[in-house]
Amino acid sequence: MLIFVLIVALCQSSTLSTKIRQIPRITTLQTYVNDTFEIKLPVSLTTGYRWILRTALNDDESIIKIISEIYLPDESINYNEITTFCGGVETQAITFIAQKTGTLDIEYIYRQIWLEVRPENEIRIYHVIVD
Image (cartoon, rainbow, N blue to C red; front, top):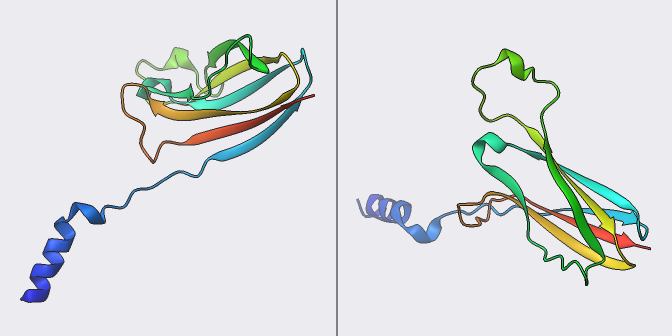
């Protein structure tokens, strides 16, 4: 009986909760001053998820600058043939221009902007080298 009580108590304990933490995916990008480069990320707009930039890019001080950010539809889906669509995958395409030489890590986190950051949110880091 005592073992049963201990097992029930442990199962109800909040200190034993398991949290899944995503390991950031790191990609190295090399470019040259005045060249543009693009980062494309899969996104599910209908579920509210977006890739949010977590790195501050001050236009005057940063080695790179965002010049456009667009969302591209999934080309394999014929949107004219469907009336309701939820959970599809689009592409978030961000175009940057390299302003000066240096290195910078830019970090994107995949999340719904109205919710707090959680350990299970996917993170992508781009190590940018500008020559």
